Length: 398
Ligand SMILES: *Cc1c(COP(=O)(O)O)cnc(C)c1O
Image (tube, rainbow, N blue to C red; front, side, top):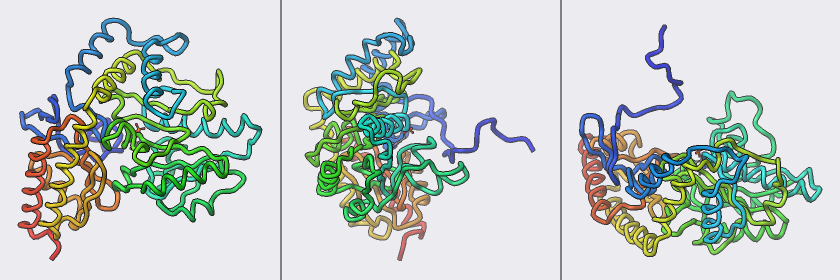
């Protein structure tokens, strides 16, 4: 039998083909306009075809694409300086993806203890429902059986405990523990928020036992919660942080950030990447920061987030048979469906609105950070029509 596609069958794709994008809109080949609140899974932080990003990429493309890390890349220096100036971090390693940023974070934590002569301290405590990527190490870190199964023995050194359970974390710490790794807001897991107190308690445990606190802000970082990084809301500072998705605005770019102390073991030759910190990626990353760090930008994100929160809360009140719960923070929102989530997603798509499935029957809304209040209200109106359609189809719970 011949396959209908030469591509791996790894993705369950929706039958949609887009030709171009403008801001919060995606335009299909047949001209249909979709309101894009999926944003490439929180990647298109500034929407589609943002003029400043397009200009930055074009200008760099005409000069230089790639030189490798055999040489200085000035864009890396400038982007790293800007990232360290506005975060806890002193050092940055650039990658091409989230999983690679996590790999660097895990390696950094292990090397930290190794450099102190503690070769046995390589274990990382992670959380149920987590998602850290699809490499051999990051599927072990995420711990979800559906991603691990069939890929050989689970990489050693990762221990899952229930999300939010500080006693379980404490219980899991031993002489071999190197670090605690957590998403301040679980994305794939279903928009589950770690409380401020929980993050503060993790910080305290790390201090008490000499562990490194690693945050995975691949999805919740870069302005999505209305602060540049989600950890700022908890008033804590991590030792290491993985960043990707929104920082590239659609160009493949990730970064591992660390304090001077945490990065101490990563000396010359310990880590590398052919493409990481490529001039094209650096030009775009710097351009993304130009916009997000501009005066008032994050205030606007918080204002629009409020429009969403109020609109979604009202929707939940009016459609308790369709919507069980509204979750999230900033522009990282989740609708926990009371109906089969696939049915709700289908109804939403029929209204030409794009959302992303997640765990726990949640549909994620991850609108671009440039979404205006008017566009938010347009999205809410489409959601309302979708909820009505689900109810009318008799799918809703009695
Ligand atoms: C998407 C994601 C990753 C993996 O990023 P890739 O770029 O797909 O490798 C890791 N952690 C979180 C929280 C993510 O949302």
